[in-house]
Image 1: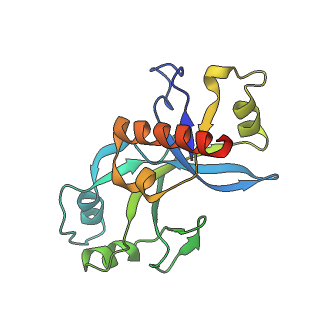
Image 2: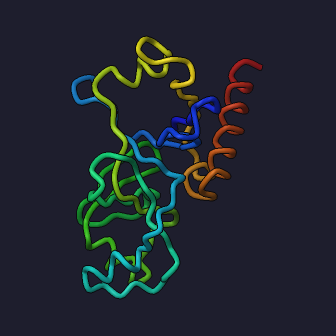
Length: 178
């Protein structure tokens, strides 16, 4: 996961965000989803648009990023699948079809999941420049990094999730050198 640097200005879209990177290619760049920004829209509202009766009226859709805002993606644990499911790292999969909503509505759910609208993406080489604080980016535009865990991805949200990710980053850094 990428964790927004604490010095990143509050007015920046990525301020205090946690991003799960699910694709990284030399030719196509990097793709991820912001995992800690709940939107105002609920899964139930989205399902209503498709004629699916969803039982949980408070479960939110998350803002996955500023790109492709109409793309709906579910990040979930790897024991579950739908008609359009792909591997998204060790222990995780991503699904992006409307059949997944029918399955969820019928209580056929993965152990862990979140649904997102939109993604975050970087041009080839861009994320590496940001990580290194190389021109035209500065240290405040750089990212902190931690290994993805279920705790970071699914147990909290909002700024609390960013705090959990920062703690994990610190602990993982400490564990590597001590």
